[in-house]
Length: 68
Image (cartoon, rainbow, N blue to C red):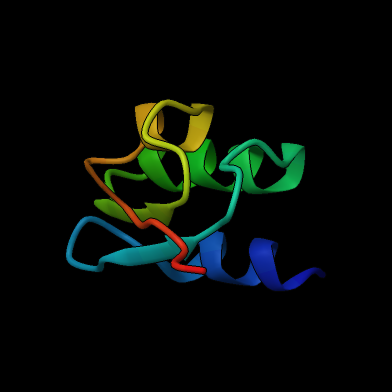
């Protein structure tokens, strides 16, 4: 069982999942987020891009800008 599968097995609507991803586009992350949302668990994501699949699935998405 993967870590994602373990989390999905135990979360419910009383929990909160925080997902941090640079692109918000990794297939495994999107699949995980969709399964979590089906269970009614709220998702907060932090991504570099404002528009991406993870941001669309999440209840709240925060973006960051990397400073040089």
